[in-house]
Image 1 (cartoon, rainbow, N blue to C red):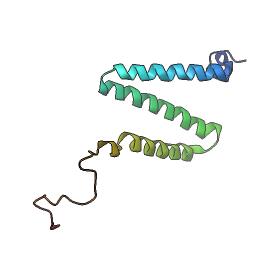
Image 2 (cartoon, rainbow, N blue to C red):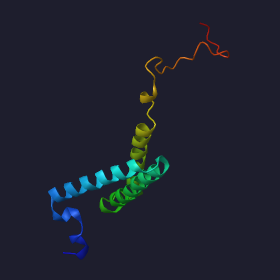
Image 3 (cartoon, helix red, strand yellow):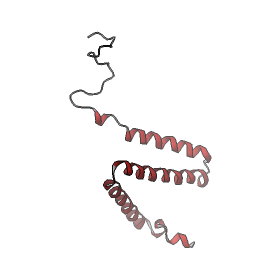
Length: 113
């Protein structure tokens, strides 16, 4: 066995790997929870981009998808991040839900009430 293989958590079995992954996720969550918002965002996006690089390299070389695999994975990841981070449904107030109709009280509006 390669010496570095002993350090990898998956080589020790699935239960150890799942426990190790859970500990890492909990630590990361607690870490970004105590940081100031801007630094926490930097830490979160650093982790996301590092994992993107690792996964896209794996798709490109291990699965032989080439640069197209990394590109498609980047599109999928970008769509998920934009939908998750910039969701507008939670920002709508119950008194005035979001609508696509212009506000009739706006002076420049061409829509007559």
